[in-house]
Image (cartoon, rainbow, N blue to C red; front, side, top):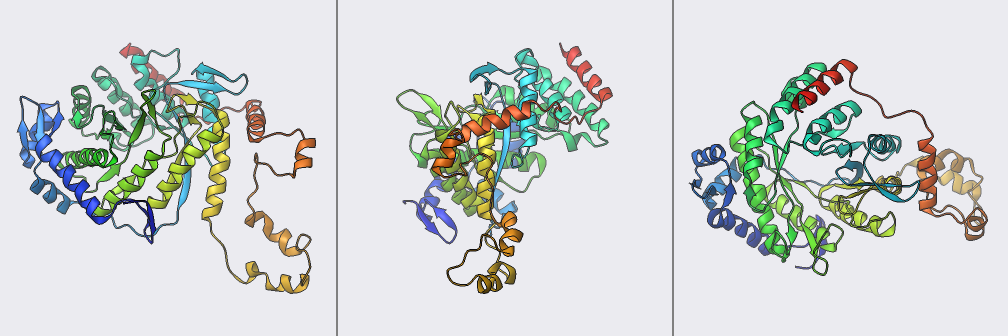
Length: 469
C-alpha cells in the first residue's frame, strides 16, 4: 500500500498487509526461534510454556502462546492527540564540534559541561541524556560508573549503561548510595539497559548483566539494537518489520514473565545502509516509512509506541541535518502524538554540535507554535477593532495589536527577520552566524550547570569507582 492520509493520520499498510506482517512475526518466534544465552532466563520461558532447546540456547514461542500472552496484556486505547514536539540533547562517545574553530574534538570535562549548560539555557531543549561517559581522560572500561556520577550530579537523564558484568557490583553499590542520599528506594532510582546486539538474540554478556540485577529485585530494560535494511535486517521493509515486531514481542513476554508488566511498548529502530559506502544511515526516507508502519502495527496490537526520530547523518550543522530530523519527527508526531528531535546530534550519533542544538531549539519552538492552534473568542475575533479600523485601514498601530502580538506571533531569535536591503546592511548574517553569536554569549556566562549532588555523596560514589579500579 502507498502512503495515504486518513482520519487516523498517515497510513502505509492496509489491513491485509498488517495481518501478513504480524503472522510472519509469529512464525519467526514459533519456527525460527530466538537465541537467549542464559539458562536461567530460558528456564523461566520454558515454565511459561515455550519450547526450549538448551543445547542451542534457543527458545520457540508458539502462535497459541503468543496469542494467550496478548490476551493478558492491558491494551492501549489510541485516541486523537494534539501533536507536540520535544527536544533533548544526547551525549555518547564521539566528537564535539567546537564552534570556536570548527574542529572535531574529543570530549573533555570542560566541553561536556558546556554542552550540558547550553541544553539548560535553551528554552525548548528539555535537558540532556547520557549513555556512557565519553570524556577522553576517563578509562573506557569505567565509563558506566562515571556516567552515573555525572548524571546524578548534573541532573542528566540516563545513567543506564552496564557494559561489563565485572562492573555490576560497583553499579549496585553506587545505586544504593545515591538512593539513600535522595531518601528513596533503590528500585525508584535504578535505570539499566542492555541491547539485542544481533537480531533475534540476547547475547550472553547482556543476559548475564540483566540477570544479575533481576536477582536483586531490579529491572534492566532490554531494547532492540536497531536493525539496518540489508544489514542485520532484510533489505525489504516488510521483512524488517516482521523481525522488529518479533523482537518487541519477545521483550514484552520476558517483561511479563519476570516483572509482571502487562503493557507492551513497541520501540522502533529500523535504519538503512548506503549500498555504495556500506555506511549506517539515519536520515533516509526509509526511516519515516518504518515509523508510520510500526505505529500501525502497535495500534493494531494495542501496544504503546515509541518511534526513533529526529536524527541525522550530516556531519555539519545546517540544511541536511534540519530536514532529515524534521521529517522523521513530523511523521512520528502525526502517528503517535509526539515528535522528538535529538538536539545537537549529527553524524549518526558520532558528532555533537552546539550550533545544531541552537538551530533545533528554534525549530522546536516554531513547530510547537504551529501545534498551539487558533484561539477563537470575542477578543481574538477582534470585531470591534475591525469596526474601528474600517475598510482600507491598518492594524499595526491599534491597541488590539499591542495587547495581543506577543502571545499570538512567534518571535525568532536566529531566523531572518528583515527585508533584503536591511539584512545586507546589517551584515548579511544567516542562522548559523546568529547561532554562533548566541553560543559565544553563553560561553561568557561564568555560571556553570546546576549541581544536584551533595559533596558527601559525590565522595562516596568516587570512592566506589576508585575501589573498582
